Amino acid sequence: MTLRLFRVDDRLVHGQVVIGWGRPLATRFIVLVDNGVCESDWEQDLYRMAVPNDVQLIFANVAEAAAHMVEWVADPRPGMLLTADLATMAALHDAVPALIRRINLGGLHHRPGRVERLRYIYLGEAEEALLRRLRRDGAEISAQDLPTTPAVDLEALLR
Amino acid sequence: MKPRTEALLRLLAVQASYTYERMAGIGVGHAAAPLLRDVFATRSVRERREAVARSADFFNSHPYLAGVAVGAEVKAEQDGVPGPVISRLRTALSGPLGALGDQLIWAGWVPALIGIGLIAAPWAGLWAIVGIVLVHNVLRLWLTAWGLDLGLREGLRVGGALQRSWLPRGAVEAQRVAAFAVGAALPVVAWQVLQHASRGEVGATVGVALVGVVLSVVPRTRVRVSGLRFGLLLVGVALLALGGLR
Image: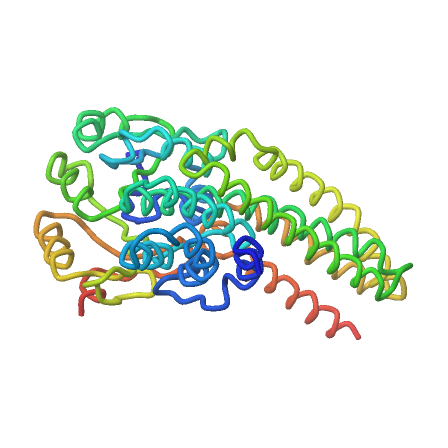
């Protein structure tokens, strides 16, 4: 499997993703799955600027991502897939559960109604329920902002 | 004081209220407030409060380029762009401004100035340090003002304007200058440190440097250890080796 990271991060493409994970994983393509960004040219322009020239950035909505997942998994180049929220990652997992086994929580920041779980993970009740449901459906979930920091298992995260 | 000047001065302290909850959000909101006060002078208080609250929401980027985001969101508010779209603009700007700022400043002009300072230090002494601190701060002030004006001019179109500007190319060139300056500084520093050292001490230093070079190209090192920790570890080993020899 060459999609090496399935990450939920509300900042989408930024330094931790491109440099922190991208360099050690030798990432050559990034799939950004977001229904809003997929329809917004100016947002796509901005995200492209955050990616080095030798890394391909692919924009897709959930339906397109589900349709192309087999192709991306078979791609010999190392890649990663990003969503800005848990609902999008859950929708994708529901569509292709066998292809998304591990989910990385990389950044879900403060919003009204969310509680701090880690410095970079804030969760509301609905999001916690969604994470538990994803785990029941077979996904391995952990929080880890960078590869050089320890991963926190979902059990410990929600304790 | 004019709103732009007030915003510019506040941008110099954009990280003063840095928190994990909102990162630089409060600083950005604080910097945007004088401009928003001006923009919303003829609109309702409720609208202005909503705009100020939006501008103080979570934001993470390079602090020296935060002016681009402040300017762009103020222009978008002025143009009557819906609130949710402005929030998306802030999110979308975080990554590129962070990446470009890291390349231009942390990987570009800062190491370049340090390299130049190290080369000049044996001859200019303390003036070398004073010089690079002055140049750094002049560049920082100029960059912040440039970014604020670009954002205020372009609003939602700021992404295209950034792409067409000198910034992406400048970020690449700054890293090349940095690599050259640090490379040129290495023999000067080595000469300064080791000119009175014994052959054993020179050998130990070269040995640690070689181990560092070899380990830094091993993929496992790059995944498991951050560059800062790795560098500090090597400096520690070098100091221990030199201490053991003396």
